[in-house]
Structures are given as structure tokens and as C-alpha cells.
Length: 387
Image: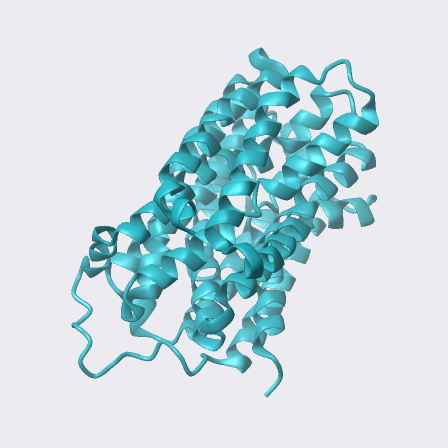
């Protein structure tokens, strides 16, 4: 049996490339459909809403722990690939596009949290570092459509999106072949998986602190990823529709993968709670400083955005590791899915406000994201204080 972690990590990269595939075609969609930049935020939020309802379905029903995680992952990756391809080939306006992006998001609810459960089922003793690799691949998967757009500069936007569908199908085959790990099997004396049993996790203090930190982190993360191309344009670092914009967006988002991996290694020495706290503090500093960097040289502004991109997601795997460690093993899949659903509901607010107000606020839109990491630090305090 090959090492399962690289297989899961690579499948996560391929599967989550579906998430922001439409954002890589934002300029083309605005021109082709005559839509406003704020409508790109609406398309992103359609994915988020689908993901939220999907994770609520998997968690509250207990489906995430009733069936093998590998089968759920594979089925959802195939369905997501099909809906993503339909968006590229059949959508002709916002009406059909919103429905198809919603379906992609619902499918991703069986890819991202179930990928985390697969990691814990194979290597629970090093979940923090392994989940850091997994979320690093989620981050790289998020940036991947920008990278594909850069490499296929002459391709129509539909081609870039179809590449994501092909990668998701490959992810499904990889995970189906791997199967589930030997851990997290239900004990014979475990309580039955009643509807809503996952809510019990929030009565556990350590789970609650980790979840609160995660919720603050989510206010910032996906809005930052959505706004990255616009921030690059507003900072005078790239022009709309150019390869330079795609390349810089890929770098700023994709460097988060390195931040996750570095945080995973660091967690061996100082623990997941302190790594998460350090990342929250650093990304909060970047939020606060970016609007003040207008007169800086370009290289320094790029360096600030790269630091922000590296730290804004470096805490994410540690919230998952801390939450998985705090809740009963028989509901790990449901608890992680439920935590995701609330966190992604929070992202809808910051994405919608950010894309709607960025025209008036300019680079000061970064301050809209600042309360997220600050409140996340406060929520996480009981854990990093005693770490």
C-alpha cells in the first residue's frame, strides 16, 4: 500500500480546482454576458451556498459518518465535475450559471470535509501536519484555474474550466482506489447516529474555541481569495485581463500552500493552537497595513500580498486538527462538515460586501476583512493560552 497521505493530498488539489474555476474567467464573463463585477461575487456565493447546504445535509443527517468517506468523495467529485462542465458548455447567463455553480458547491461538500476525514482515518497520530498538506492543496487548487489560464493564454475561458472538471474526475478515481483508513471505525458501544447528534460537539469547550477561531478566519479567507485580482489591479500591480494578473493572482493565492506546509512543520514544535494564533495575528496585520501601502514600491506591495496569502490560510488545517481531536471519534466527519457549513455561511457575507463595496472603498476594502482574524484570535484564546 503506497503512503495514503500524498494520494489524498493530490486528489484534494484536483477536486478543489472546481471551487474558483469561474473566477479565473471573470473578465470574459463580464464581457460576454454584460454582467457587473459584483455578479462575480454572486457566482462565488452560489458555490458557497451550495457548499453550506451540502455540509449541513451531510452533518445533520450523519451521512458523513454512515458511509465510507472514499465513496462519498468519489461520487461528489464526479457530480461536481459534471456540473462544472455544464457551466462551461451550457450556461448562457446568470440564471443558469447560479444554479450550476450552486450544484458545484453542493458537490464540494463531499470532497473537502470528507478529504479531511480520510486523512484522520489513515494517520490520526499526525493529523495536524497531514491536514496542513491537505489544506495546502485546497489552496493550490483554488489558485489552479489562474495558473491554467496563465499557461493556456490563448484558450477560450471554457477550456480552462473544463480542465478543472477533468482533474476532478481523476481525483475521484484516485480516492476510490485508495479507500478508507483503518481508524475512525465506529465502536460497538458508540451512541447511534441520530439526526442532529453533531450539535453535541459544541458542548465541548475545546471544540467550541477551535470553531470560534475558524469562524473568524473564514470571514477573511474566501473574501481575500475572491478579491485578490481586484486588489492587484487597485494596487497598480497588473492590468485587467492580462497574463500578469493571472500570474500574480496564482502566486498570491497559491503561496498559501507553502504557508500551510510550513505551519504544519512548525506545529510539531509549538502545537496547532499557537500556529493558528500566529497566522491569525500576521494576516490581521496585513489587513491593517495594505490600504496604507499605496506609496510603496511595487516589489514591496507584492511582498506584502504574498505574506498575506501565505498566512491567511496557514491556520486553517489546525482548526480542523484541533476540532477533530476535541470531539468524539464517531462523529468526526459530521462535526468537521458542520463546522465547515457555519464557516462558509460567514464567507458569504464578506464576499458579498467586499465585491459590492470595493468600487467605493478601493484598497481600504481590506479593513472590512480585519475583524475576522481579530475575533478569531479572541475565540481561540482558551486554546493558545494553555498550549
